[in-house]
Length: 640
Image 1 (cartoon, rainbow, N blue to C red):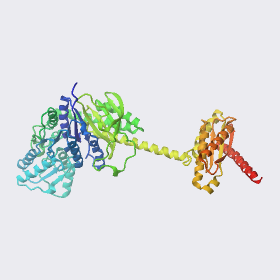
Image 2: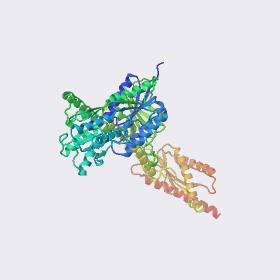
Image 3: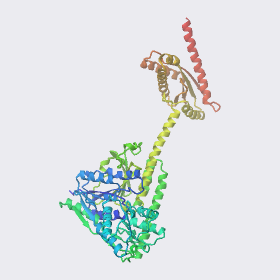
Image 4: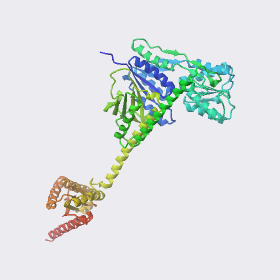
């Protein structure tokens, strides 16, 4: 029997960025060559400056049951939230599975694969100082809680000191490795009133590129007026104008090496504690050097066109999906809309997995675990599984299994992305054997569209329930749980019109309770309410014996029954049933008073000149005559 394929979990954030994408491509290539299943648990935290949104994004990490994996690759350096990183590290450590981590030597139980950030940053800073004469230098840093950011910043400080230059702390900006940080750093500096520096050294390319663009908005030319350098040597940095002086890192090799290390461990080879890869400084136009490594112009044009075309196609896809989701009024319509567009994502399989209670009302904010967000329900439902054009579903599966359907083969690459509204879990979706999550800049937008559509359906579901309850309260008497006057008139009017049209006879019965004042005065109003409820129960039971009958509480102790299919014998039949049920009720409740009521019924052939109110009035008058005879009869008995 063939050995079960290895299962490896990868923890990552921001998979649409070039650093993550390059490492992922290295992991995937190695995994496919060795028939390994990879599951990426990916978030887009830190993207839109919303704490609640980030908590919802990072909730995908709460889904992972590490005991079900053979190993883990930790790209926790891409997660900007320290508490989230710490929680993941603790859980992986407690699971006991082998793990590889990137650029972090704080956990000796894991294999650390790192790229020498320090020497490359030293080369860049030394080059700017010694080759281009820079003396006043600003630095745009990544978050110092990130080991790579800290190593680069430390290398900058040491190189400045080695060259006899002082670092002015006012010229250091601490960012989050996000592109917006470069713009913000320049804006803050320009508002400070300090003299322009000779150079901006940036901890990554994303920040460097926006810094160049922002400097140009202020009228400064790079590198004529000021030098700007980056780090990572990304595609955009290489093909920017001016091309960016940066650091080339072997990221695909890093990803491949991580996967290979785990494979060798499973083959019985002890895992190394440290693996170090070299980085190389690339000097280009942004520091004033000519670049011999710029992309061929024709190749660049073709590549740029392909990127634009793909982006346009993805934008069109999302616009059409957004419009279609906006038309969905139910979860079924919502899922149908998603299915229409799955095949355009270019994947083999798509699974929509929702928490079993995703439609329920949310818990209070105070009930959420601060920083980690909502946890998944014990069981999930997969209402949509699309596999090579065939649709299926799984009604229920344990959330600890993560996948609604297990893989029977190896070499599968899956991306699990969170669906949430702010910090609230709705579920997640899985794209298997498709590159949309790492190749499209719109994967995050797709995720948010699906999440928002699910939240809209959830809210609509509760709104409809609330409306139904309001409607019920409008037409149902709360004490007796039968129609009130409004409900009776609305329903009876429609039945009455049908009777007129069909030429059917109708019967209206007006029922008035006897002796309610006596019960209230002698036993209290609660007992009076009880008596009214028991009378209503009798009336409801009597009415239910005729399929075309409805009943209602018309006033305090007044009730009506409307029969839309009456016969000459209907009046006597109803009275017999009523008296029998009343006798039975009295024997059951065993009260010191007798539950009694007067019934007046009228059977007529309705026409267009007749109204419901006229018939009720006639039945009321007949009931009054009966009640009057009862009183006279009691008086005569008392006089004898």
